[in-house]
Picture 1 (cartoon, rainbow, N blue to C red):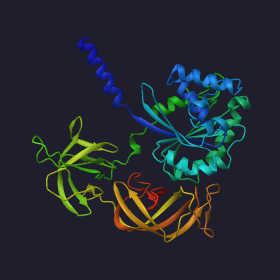
Picture 2: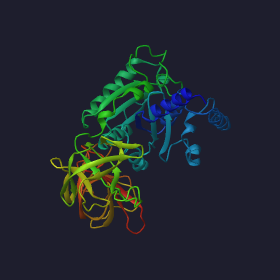
Picture 3: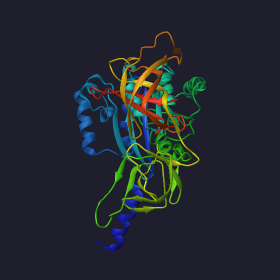
Length: 431
């Protein structure tokens, strides 16, 4: 192959790898068309293969449907296909020339709240679907609340099935007004509204000829261009150590690096840092990656940091800035979504994972349970069953280095694990 062609391919590959990655989740009531929307997005953006489309087409014909059911592209479980609903979280990957995407298609049923929390926990953006015929219903409010609780920075409200209300602008405006009235009670988030028909493709990838009154962007344009660089915390420097690298080879005989993912802030070569829990100060000697040395690293990059002084550091320790340190405590308040069929036990002991730190903890009390449909606190019934969300207090065996979840989703989240079965019991957001 000619040299200039090789360099072109290399340039294209490196450009592709350096593209932004947007993680987004879908939320909405049953039959609002979440899976259909994702299928339409994949199909119209040319992100599925011909044989995948043919398989879905054949499956649709078998079921006696009059059109190609694009929802089957994401509903992978047999029970999902049989019932025509989404049960588990389905992850799909696709890319356009502008950006890479990971989609988490989450269920709409109330009994799968835990699945929605799982799919939405790492998302930059949530697509909330509303059926244009039904408007804002309890499920809509519940999903918007969970998106707000998980501090998803951007919400795109897609008012779907506009073809069934004759593409009327007044229907769109009325639903938009209702949603804005409810959203005013939530933490401030960036909200955009788009009228669509997932079945026919109106305003999904291509502009709708049926809704010339709508002058905003299509859904794909919104996904490609929404600003996500500032979603990460680039102020509070946090580097939880995952692994200590000691090659013990002739070439790197004295090398001792600390590998992990930057959970916040910007680290630069020569920065003065403090290691927790020891409290020893030192300077950053180098920031290394597989591709070579860097001058700086920021969230969410994975790097190896070497330090100028020999300090005893192991997995679970955290490298931070001298004048900007996280909270350190064994008594922690958190909002928790309970995942397990066995209810949360006050006085119960659980394993805990927080960043790269493992510990054990005891549940001291349940302050209240949330009614996710009305946003009211339930203080007379504090039993947390599967899919319930509530506020609890725990005490850990070792101090944790944490920030509030609202300022840092990495250092502000944790999971509780059953010691006997190793099942994940709940996911918590530190308040």
